Image 1 (cartoon, rainbow, N blue to C red):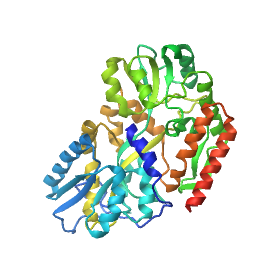
Image 2: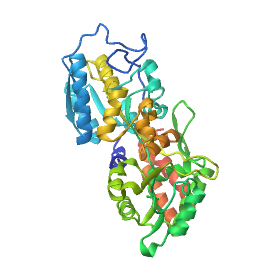
Image 3: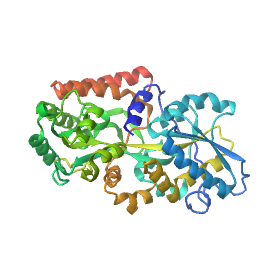
Image 4: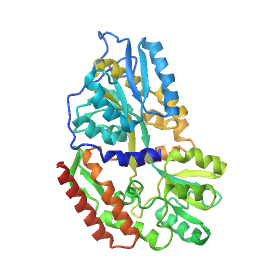
Length: 429
Protein backbone atom coordinates (compact mmCIF):
# COMPACT_ATOMS: atom_id res chain seq x y z
CA UNK A 1 0.00 0.00 0.00
CA UNK A 2 0.98 3.58 -0.47
CA UNK A 3 0.46 4.13 3.24
CA UNK A 4 2.85 1.30 3.95
CA UNK A 5 5.65 3.02 2.05
CA UNK A 6 4.90 6.39 3.56
CA UNK A 7 5.05 4.87 7.03
CA UNK A 8 8.14 2.95 6.05
CA UNK A 9 10.04 6.11 5.20
CA UNK A 10 9.28 7.46 8.65
CA UNK A 11 10.00 4.23 10.47
CA UNK A 12 13.28 3.61 8.72
CA UNK A 13 14.65 6.82 10.28
CA UNK A 14 14.52 5.13 13.67
CA UNK A 15 16.55 2.11 12.73
CA UNK A 16 20.12 1.27 13.63
CA UNK A 17 23.03 0.88 11.27
CA UNK A 18 25.04 -1.77 9.47
CA UNK A 19 23.94 -5.21 8.36
CA UNK A 20 25.39 -8.49 9.48
CA UNK A 21 25.17 -12.08 8.38
CA UNK A 22 24.91 -15.47 10.04
CA UNK A 23 24.88 -19.18 9.32
CA UNK A 24 22.09 -20.52 7.16
CA UNK A 25 19.27 -22.77 8.21
CA UNK A 26 16.44 -24.23 6.20
CA UNK A 27 13.99 -27.05 5.59
CA UNK A 28 12.51 -29.44 3.08
CA UNK A 29 9.35 -31.38 3.82
CA UNK A 30 5.85 -32.07 2.61
CA UNK A 31 4.39 -29.24 4.64
CA UNK A 32 6.14 -26.49 2.68
CA UNK A 33 6.90 -25.88 -0.99
CA UNK A 34 7.88 -29.08 -2.71
CA UNK A 35 11.62 -28.93 -1.96
CA UNK A 36 14.36 -31.35 -2.97
CA UNK A 37 15.30 -34.19 -0.69
CA UNK A 38 18.58 -33.59 1.11
CA UNK A 39 18.49 -29.81 0.68
CA UNK A 40 18.41 -27.63 3.78
CA UNK A 41 17.12 -28.47 7.23
CA UNK A 42 14.34 -31.02 7.53
CA UNK A 43 11.68 -31.61 10.16
CA UNK A 44 12.33 -35.33 9.93
CA UNK A 45 13.05 -36.61 13.41
CA UNK A 46 12.22 -33.22 14.97
CA UNK A 47 9.43 -33.36 17.55
CA UNK A 48 6.40 -31.31 16.65
CA UNK A 49 5.62 -28.41 18.95
CA UNK A 50 2.07 -28.05 20.15
CA UNK A 51 1.94 -24.59 18.64
CA UNK A 52 3.85 -21.93 16.72
CA UNK A 53 3.51 -18.24 17.54
CA UNK A 54 3.24 -15.79 14.66
CA UNK A 55 3.02 -12.01 14.60
CA UNK A 56 1.01 -10.91 11.57
CA UNK A 57 0.42 -7.43 10.23
CA UNK A 58 -2.63 -5.82 11.80
CA UNK A 59 -4.67 -5.63 8.60
CA UNK A 60 -8.13 -7.22 8.46
CA UNK A 61 -7.87 -8.61 4.92
CA UNK A 62 -4.42 -10.03 5.55
CA UNK A 63 -5.53 -11.60 8.82
CA UNK A 64 -8.57 -13.16 7.15
CA UNK A 65 -6.39 -14.79 4.50
CA UNK A 66 -3.85 -16.02 7.02
CA UNK A 67 -6.52 -17.42 9.35
CA UNK A 68 -7.61 -19.76 6.58
CA UNK A 69 -4.04 -20.74 5.77
CA UNK A 70 -3.15 -21.34 9.42
CA UNK A 71 -6.20 -23.57 9.87
CA UNK A 72 -5.12 -25.64 6.89
CA UNK A 73 -1.63 -25.96 8.38
CA UNK A 74 -3.05 -27.17 11.69
CA UNK A 75 -5.19 -29.73 9.86
CA UNK A 76 -2.16 -30.99 7.95
CA UNK A 77 0.40 -31.05 10.74
CA UNK A 78 -1.52 -30.98 13.99
CA UNK A 79 0.40 -27.87 15.03
CA UNK A 80 -1.75 -24.94 16.20
CA UNK A 81 -0.76 -21.52 14.88
CA UNK A 82 -1.24 -18.79 17.47
CA UNK A 83 -1.46 -15.55 15.50
CA UNK A 84 -1.33 -12.06 17.00
CA UNK A 85 -2.03 -8.94 14.95
CA UNK A 86 0.55 -6.17 15.30
CA UNK A 87 1.49 -3.36 12.95
CA UNK A 88 4.66 -4.27 11.06
CA UNK A 89 6.36 -1.04 12.01
CA UNK A 90 5.98 -1.67 15.75
CA UNK A 91 6.91 -5.35 15.75
CA UNK A 92 10.67 -4.91 16.00
CA UNK A 93 10.79 -2.93 19.22
CA UNK A 94 8.30 -5.36 20.76
CA UNK A 95 10.39 -8.28 19.56
CA UNK A 96 13.55 -6.82 21.08
CA UNK A 97 11.80 -6.68 24.45
CA UNK A 98 9.74 -9.86 24.35
CA UNK A 99 11.93 -12.38 22.53
CA UNK A 100 14.80 -12.55 25.07
CA UNK A 101 12.19 -13.16 27.77
CA UNK A 102 10.70 -16.05 25.83
CA UNK A 103 7.52 -14.15 24.97
CA UNK A 104 8.25 -13.46 21.33
CA UNK A 105 6.98 -15.19 18.18
CA UNK A 106 8.54 -17.92 16.07
CA UNK A 107 7.73 -15.90 12.95
CA UNK A 108 7.10 -12.25 12.26
CA UNK A 109 6.25 -10.18 9.17
CA UNK A 110 8.30 -7.24 7.90
CA UNK A 111 9.07 -4.98 4.94
CA UNK A 112 12.37 -6.16 3.49
CA UNK A 113 14.33 -2.94 3.85
CA UNK A 114 14.32 -3.29 7.64
CA UNK A 115 16.18 -6.59 7.46
CA UNK A 116 19.66 -5.07 7.77
CA UNK A 117 18.83 -3.51 11.12
CA UNK A 118 16.95 -6.60 12.29
CA UNK A 119 19.97 -8.79 11.53
CA UNK A 120 22.33 -6.35 13.22
CA UNK A 121 20.24 -6.53 16.37
CA UNK A 122 20.35 -10.32 16.33
CA UNK A 123 16.60 -10.72 16.07
CA UNK A 124 16.39 -12.99 13.00
CA UNK A 125 18.26 -16.05 11.77
CA UNK A 126 19.00 -16.93 8.14
CA UNK A 127 16.80 -19.37 6.25
CA UNK A 128 18.25 -21.92 3.83
CA UNK A 129 15.55 -22.68 1.27
CA UNK A 130 17.78 -25.05 -0.68
CA UNK A 131 16.54 -25.47 -4.25
CA UNK A 132 13.24 -23.92 -3.20
CA UNK A 133 14.89 -20.52 -3.37
CA UNK A 134 14.27 -20.71 -7.13
CA UNK A 135 10.50 -20.85 -6.58
CA UNK A 136 10.38 -17.19 -5.61
CA UNK A 137 10.83 -14.10 -7.75
CA UNK A 138 14.53 -13.36 -8.16
CA UNK A 139 13.81 -9.76 -7.20
CA UNK A 140 12.13 -10.92 -3.99
CA UNK A 141 15.00 -13.20 -3.02
CA UNK A 142 17.52 -10.44 -3.70
CA UNK A 143 15.48 -8.17 -1.45
CA UNK A 144 15.68 -10.54 1.54
CA UNK A 145 19.38 -11.34 1.08
CA UNK A 146 22.01 -9.72 3.27
CA UNK A 147 25.70 -10.42 2.61
CA UNK A 148 24.83 -13.53 0.66
CA UNK A 149 22.49 -14.99 3.31
CA UNK A 150 18.73 -15.33 2.78
CA UNK A 151 16.92 -13.98 5.84
CA UNK A 152 13.30 -14.37 4.88
CA UNK A 153 10.65 -16.23 2.93
CA UNK A 154 8.97 -13.61 0.70
CA UNK A 155 5.19 -13.28 0.75
CA UNK A 156 4.37 -10.11 -1.20
CA UNK A 157 5.83 -7.95 -3.98
CA UNK A 158 4.90 -4.28 -4.35
CA UNK A 159 5.81 -1.73 -6.98
CA UNK A 160 4.11 0.95 -9.04
CA UNK A 161 3.15 1.62 -12.65
CA UNK A 162 0.63 3.57 -14.70
CA UNK A 163 -3.14 3.86 -14.37
CA UNK A 164 -4.99 5.45 -17.28
CA UNK A 165 -8.50 6.52 -18.21
CA UNK A 166 -9.51 4.71 -21.42
CA UNK A 167 -11.80 7.57 -22.36
CA UNK A 168 -8.86 9.97 -22.43
CA UNK A 169 -5.84 8.00 -23.63
CA UNK A 170 -4.75 4.67 -25.11
CA UNK A 171 -2.01 2.43 -23.67
CA UNK A 172 0.00 2.92 -26.86
CA UNK A 173 0.07 6.68 -26.32
CA UNK A 174 1.70 6.31 -22.89
CA UNK A 175 3.98 3.37 -23.70
CA UNK A 176 6.99 5.67 -24.21
CA UNK A 177 8.21 8.75 -22.37
CA UNK A 178 7.96 10.71 -25.60
CA UNK A 179 4.32 9.70 -25.94
CA UNK A 180 3.57 10.45 -22.30
CA UNK A 181 5.01 13.95 -22.63
CA UNK A 182 2.86 14.53 -25.73
CA UNK A 183 -0.22 13.51 -23.74
CA UNK A 184 0.84 15.84 -20.92
CA UNK A 185 1.26 18.74 -23.35
CA UNK A 186 -2.01 18.20 -25.19
CA UNK A 187 -4.29 17.41 -22.26
CA UNK A 188 -3.03 19.71 -19.51
CA UNK A 189 -5.15 22.74 -18.65
CA UNK A 190 -4.23 23.55 -15.07
CA UNK A 191 -6.82 26.33 -14.90
CA UNK A 192 -9.52 23.70 -15.42
CA UNK A 193 -7.79 21.15 -13.16
CA UNK A 194 -7.23 18.91 -16.17
CA UNK A 195 -3.96 17.08 -16.68
CA UNK A 196 -2.46 14.59 -19.08
CA UNK A 197 -0.10 13.06 -16.53
CA UNK A 198 0.29 13.33 -12.77
CA UNK A 199 2.50 11.73 -10.13
CA UNK A 200 4.01 12.62 -6.77
CA UNK A 201 7.04 14.13 -8.46
CA UNK A 202 8.79 15.33 -5.30
CA UNK A 203 8.59 11.90 -3.65
CA UNK A 204 11.89 10.08 -4.23
CA UNK A 205 10.24 6.66 -3.89
CA UNK A 206 8.19 7.31 -7.03
CA UNK A 207 10.80 9.38 -8.89
CA UNK A 208 13.61 6.84 -8.56
CA UNK A 209 12.87 5.02 -11.86
CA UNK A 210 13.72 8.11 -13.87
CA UNK A 211 17.10 8.30 -12.14
CA UNK A 212 17.79 4.57 -12.34
CA UNK A 213 16.57 4.22 -15.93
CA UNK A 214 19.27 6.62 -17.05
CA UNK A 215 22.08 5.07 -14.98
CA UNK A 216 21.59 6.54 -11.52
CA UNK A 217 21.55 4.37 -8.40
CA UNK A 218 21.31 4.72 -4.64
CA UNK A 219 24.15 2.42 -3.52
CA UNK A 220 26.24 0.46 -5.99
CA UNK A 221 25.66 -3.28 -5.89
CA UNK A 222 28.10 -5.49 -7.80
CA UNK A 223 26.22 -8.61 -6.82
CA UNK A 224 27.97 -9.07 -3.49
CA UNK A 225 25.89 -6.50 -1.60
CA UNK A 226 25.29 -2.78 -1.38
CA UNK A 227 28.28 -0.45 -1.08
CA UNK A 228 27.13 2.55 0.93
CA UNK A 229 30.34 4.41 0.07
CA UNK A 230 29.40 4.44 -3.63
CA UNK A 231 26.34 6.65 -4.12
CA UNK A 232 25.07 7.22 -7.66
CA UNK A 233 22.46 9.90 -7.10
CA UNK A 234 24.46 12.73 -8.65
CA UNK A 235 26.04 10.94 -11.60
CA UNK A 236 25.25 11.76 -15.22
CA UNK A 237 22.22 9.47 -15.35
CA UNK A 238 20.77 10.85 -12.13
CA UNK A 239 21.19 14.43 -13.38
CA UNK A 240 19.49 13.47 -16.63
CA UNK A 241 16.60 12.03 -14.65
CA UNK A 242 16.42 15.12 -12.45
CA UNK A 243 16.31 17.38 -15.49
CA UNK A 244 13.43 15.33 -16.91
CA UNK A 245 11.51 15.78 -13.66
CA UNK A 246 12.28 19.49 -13.60
CA UNK A 247 10.87 19.86 -17.11
CA UNK A 248 7.48 18.63 -15.88
CA UNK A 249 7.30 21.50 -13.43
CA UNK A 250 8.77 24.04 -15.85
CA UNK A 251 6.19 23.12 -18.50
CA UNK A 252 3.33 23.23 -16.02
CA UNK A 253 2.47 19.57 -16.47
CA UNK A 254 2.57 18.83 -12.74
CA UNK A 255 1.66 21.32 -9.99
CA UNK A 256 4.28 21.75 -7.29
CA UNK A 257 1.72 21.21 -4.55
CA UNK A 258 0.54 17.84 -5.87
CA UNK A 259 0.22 14.97 -3.42
CA UNK A 260 -1.29 11.51 -3.57
CA UNK A 261 -4.73 12.53 -2.32
CA UNK A 262 -5.08 15.44 -4.74
CA UNK A 263 -3.81 13.31 -7.62
CA UNK A 264 -6.20 10.45 -6.90
CA UNK A 265 -9.14 12.82 -6.46
CA UNK A 266 -8.54 14.41 -9.86
CA UNK A 267 -8.06 11.02 -11.50
CA UNK A 268 -11.22 9.49 -10.07
CA UNK A 269 -13.11 12.64 -11.15
CA UNK A 270 -12.07 11.90 -14.74
CA UNK A 271 -9.83 14.95 -15.04
CA UNK A 272 -6.49 13.17 -15.55
CA UNK A 273 -5.52 10.90 -18.43
CA UNK A 274 -2.87 8.88 -16.58
CA UNK A 275 -1.24 8.73 -13.14
CA UNK A 276 1.82 6.96 -11.78
CA UNK A 277 1.08 5.11 -8.55
CA UNK A 278 0.70 1.62 -7.11
CA UNK A 279 -1.82 -1.26 -7.10
CA UNK A 280 -3.01 -0.28 -3.61
CA UNK A 281 -5.24 2.20 -5.48
CA UNK A 282 -6.93 -0.39 -7.70
CA UNK A 283 -10.07 -0.74 -5.57
CA UNK A 284 -10.66 3.01 -5.29
CA UNK A 285 -9.94 3.71 -8.94
CA UNK A 286 -12.03 0.78 -10.19
CA UNK A 287 -15.00 1.88 -8.09
CA UNK A 288 -14.83 5.37 -9.63
CA UNK A 289 -13.97 4.54 -13.25
CA UNK A 290 -15.21 0.99 -13.75
CA UNK A 291 -14.40 -0.40 -17.20
CA UNK A 292 -12.71 2.88 -18.16
CA UNK A 293 -9.73 2.01 -15.91
CA UNK A 294 -6.58 0.52 -17.41
CA UNK A 295 -3.03 -0.14 -16.22
CA UNK A 296 0.39 -0.30 -17.88
CA UNK A 297 4.05 -0.63 -17.01
CA UNK A 298 6.16 2.50 -16.78
CA UNK A 299 6.83 4.13 -20.17
CA UNK A 300 10.09 3.27 -21.89
CA UNK A 301 12.78 5.94 -21.89
CA UNK A 302 14.66 7.27 -24.91
CA UNK A 303 17.24 4.51 -24.39
CA UNK A 304 14.51 1.92 -24.88
CA UNK A 305 14.59 0.67 -21.29
CA UNK A 306 11.63 0.32 -18.97
CA UNK A 307 12.52 2.43 -15.89
CA UNK A 308 13.58 0.49 -12.79
CA UNK A 309 10.92 1.03 -10.16
CA UNK A 310 11.60 0.40 -6.49
CA UNK A 311 10.23 -2.99 -5.45
CA UNK A 312 9.14 -3.59 -1.89
CA UNK A 313 8.90 -7.08 -0.44
CA UNK A 314 6.93 -8.11 2.61
CA UNK A 315 8.55 -11.18 4.06
CA UNK A 316 8.31 -13.72 6.85
CA UNK A 317 11.30 -13.71 9.18
CA UNK A 318 12.29 -16.33 11.72
CA UNK A 319 13.08 -15.19 15.23
CA UNK A 320 16.58 -16.07 16.37
CA UNK A 321 14.95 -16.85 19.74
CA UNK A 322 12.55 -19.43 18.33
CA UNK A 323 12.94 -22.87 19.87
CA UNK A 324 11.11 -24.44 16.92
CA UNK A 325 13.10 -23.16 13.97
CA UNK A 326 12.72 -26.22 11.74
CA UNK A 327 8.94 -26.09 12.07
CA UNK A 328 8.95 -22.30 11.78
CA UNK A 329 10.62 -22.64 8.39
CA UNK A 330 8.12 -25.33 7.47
CA UNK A 331 5.26 -22.95 8.24
CA UNK A 332 6.82 -20.11 6.22
CA UNK A 333 7.09 -22.37 3.20
CA UNK A 334 3.54 -23.61 3.69
CA UNK A 335 2.15 -20.06 3.83
CA UNK A 336 3.86 -19.12 0.57
CA UNK A 337 3.33 -22.26 -1.52
CA UNK A 338 1.23 -21.81 -4.66
CA UNK A 339 -2.21 -22.68 -3.31
CA UNK A 340 -1.81 -20.43 -0.30
CA UNK A 341 -0.04 -17.65 -2.17
CA UNK A 342 -3.06 -17.43 -4.47
CA UNK A 343 -5.47 -17.54 -1.53
CA UNK A 344 -3.60 -14.66 0.08
CA UNK A 345 -3.72 -12.73 -3.20
CA UNK A 346 -7.44 -13.30 -3.63
CA UNK A 347 -8.35 -12.21 -0.10
CA UNK A 348 -5.65 -9.68 0.84
CA UNK A 349 -5.24 -8.30 -2.69
CA UNK A 350 -1.43 -8.27 -2.60
CA UNK A 351 0.82 -9.71 -5.31
CA UNK A 352 2.57 -12.95 -4.39
CA UNK A 353 6.35 -13.20 -4.41
CA UNK A 354 6.13 -16.80 -5.65
CA UNK A 355 7.16 -16.80 -9.32
CA UNK A 356 4.64 -19.48 -10.33
CA UNK A 357 1.87 -17.32 -8.90
CA UNK A 358 3.14 -14.20 -10.70
CA UNK A 359 3.17 -16.18 -13.96
CA UNK A 360 -0.29 -17.65 -13.45
CA UNK A 361 -3.08 -16.65 -15.83
CA UNK A 362 -5.03 -15.25 -12.90
CA UNK A 363 -2.37 -12.61 -12.24
CA UNK A 364 -0.40 -12.23 -15.49
CA UNK A 365 -3.57 -11.87 -17.57
CA UNK A 366 -5.52 -9.80 -15.07
CA UNK A 367 -6.48 -6.56 -16.78
CA UNK A 368 -5.37 -4.42 -13.86
CA UNK A 369 -2.83 -6.27 -11.69
CA UNK A 370 -0.96 -7.87 -14.60
CA UNK A 371 0.93 -4.69 -15.49
CA UNK A 372 2.23 -4.33 -11.94
CA UNK A 373 3.34 -7.97 -11.88
CA UNK A 374 5.22 -7.34 -15.10
CA UNK A 375 6.77 -4.13 -13.73
CA UNK A 376 8.28 -6.05 -10.81
CA UNK A 377 10.43 -7.89 -13.35
CA UNK A 378 11.96 -4.56 -14.40
CA UNK A 379 12.24 -3.21 -10.86
CA UNK A 380 14.89 -3.50 -8.20
CA UNK A 381 14.53 -3.92 -4.44
CA UNK A 382 14.96 -0.92 -2.22
CA UNK A 383 18.35 -1.31 -0.51
CA UNK A 384 17.96 -3.36 2.67
CA UNK A 385 20.96 -1.91 4.50
CA UNK A 386 20.35 0.56 7.35
CA UNK A 387 22.22 3.36 5.54
CA UNK A 388 19.14 3.71 3.34
CA UNK A 389 17.56 5.66 6.21
CA UNK A 390 19.91 8.54 5.39
CA UNK A 391 18.69 8.87 1.78
CA UNK A 392 15.04 9.86 2.04
CA UNK A 393 15.24 13.32 3.59
CA UNK A 394 18.13 14.72 1.48
CA UNK A 395 16.56 13.42 -1.73
CA UNK A 396 13.12 14.70 -0.77
CA UNK A 397 14.60 18.14 -0.20
CA UNK A 398 16.56 17.92 -3.44
CA UNK A 399 13.40 17.24 -5.43
CA UNK A 400 11.73 20.26 -3.85
CA UNK A 401 14.64 22.44 -5.01
CA UNK A 402 14.49 20.85 -8.46
CA UNK A 403 10.77 21.61 -8.66
CA UNK A 404 11.56 25.24 -7.83
CA UNK A 405 14.01 25.49 -10.72
CA UNK A 406 17.39 25.18 -8.98
CA UNK A 407 20.35 23.76 -10.88
CA UNK A 408 19.84 19.98 -10.94
CA UNK A 409 23.50 18.98 -10.86
CA UNK A 410 24.32 21.25 -7.94
CA UNK A 411 21.25 20.18 -5.98
CA UNK A 412 22.03 16.49 -6.39
CA UNK A 413 25.71 16.96 -5.46
CA UNK A 414 24.61 18.69 -2.27
CA UNK A 415 22.11 15.91 -1.53
CA UNK A 416 24.75 13.22 -1.95
CA UNK A 417 27.13 15.13 0.30
CA UNK A 418 24.40 15.34 2.94
CA UNK A 419 23.75 11.61 2.64
CA UNK A 420 27.45 10.88 3.06
CA UNK A 421 27.71 13.20 6.05
CA UNK A 422 24.64 11.62 7.67
CA UNK A 423 26.03 8.12 7.20
CA UNK A 424 29.36 9.15 8.69
CA UNK A 425 27.65 10.85 11.65
CA UNK A 426 25.58 7.74 12.30
CA UNK A 427 28.71 5.60 12.48
CA UNK A 428 27.77 3.47 9.46
CA UNK A 429 30.48 3.13 6.83
